[in-house]
Length: 125
Image 1 (cartoon, one colour):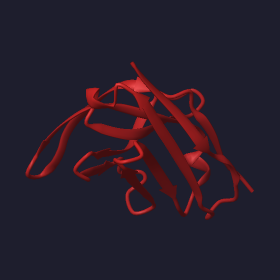
Image 2: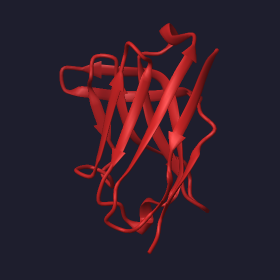
Image 3: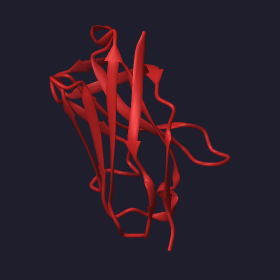
Image 4: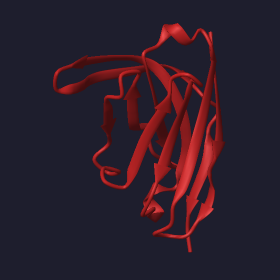
């Protein structure tokens, strides 16, 4: 079993920045990738950013160039730096962990097996 605990989130004005962190514990060896997903009211949950143990990353088109994911394998943590935030980024953000399939071109697919409890991010003036 894997436990994921998020921290960060909150209220920020449009154009502002926010950082999220997630700490994993338990069966760490059962996954090779971690990431973040989000779910806005009335919408399906979507993957936002993913990173493998080797540092390969993948981003949703909607956040490319604005969000940056990083991880510390020694501490089993993953961070999401969110810049130039927009009102449409408002959602509950969930840390996740699972198996990623990669090739020389990057992450081909990723299927989260574990999810955290979520943290609210609100972008509003």
